[in-house]
View 1: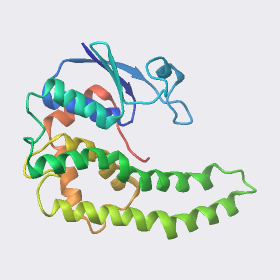
View 2 (view 1 turned 90 degrees about the vertical axis):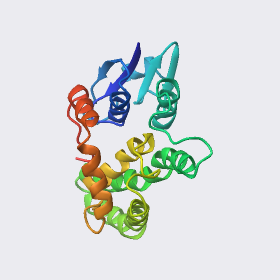
View 3 (view 1 turned 90 degrees about the horizontal axis):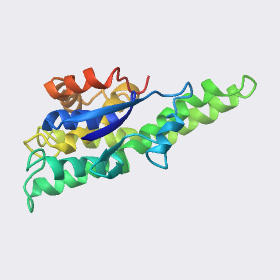
View 4 (view 1 turned 30 degrees about the vertical axis):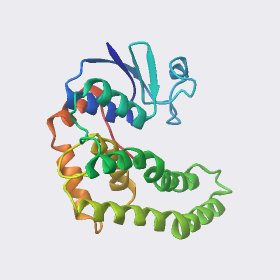
Length: 221
């Protein structure tokens, strides 16, 4: 049986959601974040990088959200959650499936990093670290993040879902950056289409089932 090596409050929540959408049987092996929010060392026994998500299935160990999504949909989807080949929708699907981690998460991770740095710096260095962090956020990170959020808004104005009129695995992949942007990037300001997308995915029964099985899921807090 397919096994999800599930780190609490992480990207592996998307894998549970995908499996619930497809009705694929699976089991969960749970891992808890350490106090510093890193994954426990036990995950290295599954994959050398020791990060989540990771799945094991039929002798295969697969990491990286996009690769996992492709594997599950290709192995168990039977044509579901993926547009037909050689269509504009399929091209958009492939793009968003990889853009989610390849481009979208970079400014969000920088936003988190520069927000946390002053809080974790030694007291004597805190004013200097805060000044450097605020400069980086103002001049580099926030403008990039706004550009991405505006991009999402424009694309979701063209169609209800990222790949077109039908819900696909690309939307599951894109859920994480949009949820992160809503948590710590100000997505709610001036991006009604993106916020409506989040409302739609949160209302899906499979999303709710994945939350029940995966546990509390709060991004960016």
